[in-house]
Image 1 (cartoon, rainbow, N blue to C red):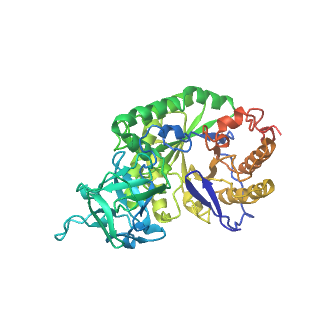
Image 2 (spheres, rainbow, N blue to C red):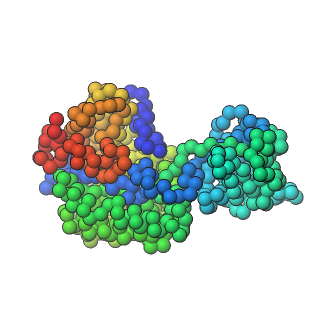
Length: 518
């Protein structure tokens, strides 16, 4: 089967359908001798911000369309061509490209609502050239770390905010003198005419709305208030009671690496998420729920997504991040090891294909040891790499570690008909889970799934059939499953909405056939 692109808002999953040999697969025993399996829900968008889950969180940020990581392009109004980092970086800026590609994209690093660094394709920053006797008015993209010379103010026209001027650190505006000569030596003027070489048309796209963006966007004065109010209101004790009363037995809680430095995490992150996690454990114990702590955002980002704590889409996690990442796991396990609700620690969420398998396994080995240093009973969840065709690549490795779990995320919104979607679930979903579920290997877990698909205007009954098919497929998963997510402004992404509106019912019976009213 061809590769199927699957879209989760603001970033892309690649779910590769591959030929799996499952004829010898034997379903392992349940995760516990009493037959316990996770029937859980993710508390997404709570302790790791995802703007698409609750967009209103970003409403009060000034210039909220220019957050960290936003991709911008600039067209000179005088020459009608794109501002560009020649060769993608390492040399001068020009304005000679009639069409935009990678060299014409600038990623924003936000300093405040009007002041930014501009990062180019090769990860260098645009700045004034002050070397070798240069007058400091010519523009280059050379520095890997931004300084004062790499700082720019974007001034927008109040009536037409896509018209901008860009002021350099020398106090002058950028202007396009010729297609090959861009300088910072214009004083600007009062008008915004199309013959002014200091005026650009700015367009923005690929906006990031994660924890870095919201905290840096609000800044050090407002961010603590906004985030603490969110943590105290988005998920509350009553939610845990409701989860328990509706046939679920666990919560998977995404956290970011900065939680280990609470109450004084590195800027721009703010303290308070650890207190919220402490509350979650209190509530879980009170209402009989198990907790899976999921390191959703690793230091320097393991996947380049905003939900990985990334600033601008760069993937920086690697060998030099291992010790810090293991330290986070050590901190979290030590803190909650004695709490009876701690069920599992997920070492890292969704590493991508470009993360070296050897480095991922090296980290998983060290992370497992960190968990076992404090707990002999907590399960250790290891995510498969996103985009990998061979979903079994971790099986021999994970089989060496007692109490290990393999997490595969299963999403389907690539098919546009009901039957195609059901067929996909009955083939790929089941084949995938059979492949990673063996009698002598790690337990298998669907850490994320959702009742969202590509069928437009589907009826309630069709949604119910879709959910039922998924749950039947997930019966193979020996560790269990967790819906993504509890609350969401998009109805079908919200398990709370799905249950309250009769799409799913987990309370009638433990049997799959009784989960749904159809």
